[in-house]
Length: 411
Image (cartoon, rainbow, N blue to C red; front, side):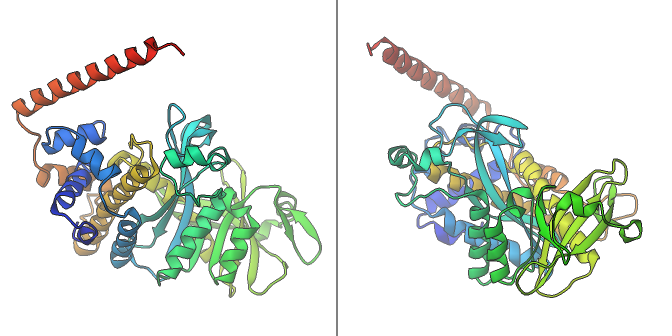
């Protein structure tokens, strides 16, 4: 918490933000302003709601502090910046950025809010260092709606690859260094993003669709058509990194491309050894690199999926019950900080304490359990619980009365 304390001018928000982050790391079954305020010993959720919605502090400055914290502890010369989006299913139409759209969380089109995250992935560990909320055209074309949700007047529509480019640029402009960028087909299929990375001298391995067009010395091909021409001897069995069940082995092949411009360009093809399913990656680097390096970077893309899983499961990344942009950005930034704390403790423990042969290394899940048991204080007494029960019932009674009154007024 000392990393971000200077962003709060008063002692009250400094203390409350600490309680909020501790609550995000707690074992509460549901984590929101109400449940965390009760868990923290406060008499009402008003203070937590004020911290997220109206208190004077800048979530972007805290994000910058978070980025510095992650780089201080997880810095790696061969780190990969992994960009990807995740969605949170929402009800209603008032929550900022919500519309009916596809989200991988549900696996279908749902009423959802989508955000793009950037994860810093190194050998010591990985953690998210930036976030951007995706604002659909249905919002940016309605200034009054944007204003009601707390968005700036200058908010303009930006695609997900444009949001990714914005985060990478911000990372580099802050003086940090990253060698590679990785992403899925949403980002690999965008030529503007690829050009922006090449201009900054950043290497990338970005997934592309099977229909993606690439140019060789012969002519232009679809990616899947070109992959059929790869001879058997060109395939190599390599690991894309260690997973929960061991190394992820695939067959890999690489084909040189002749697109205009300096640098080394390839089409990387991955073949599943069981099903034969193919995946394709567009690769660029200022200087030629070995196939093993391209495979390592392609394998790093799963780090962002691991962040989504642990960030939501351990740090309440997706449990924000807020409608305005300011509250959203503050909640997810603090959730990213909570997850980064677990990632840094994990990395430090692995470096400091050798793991016995009969144990696996400490995971973020186990560190959270130990942290709750050994550090976080127990829940308040019975009187406090009864007081909260009374407050909830009184609040719900007022809400029901207001609802009935609105329903009784003629249109």
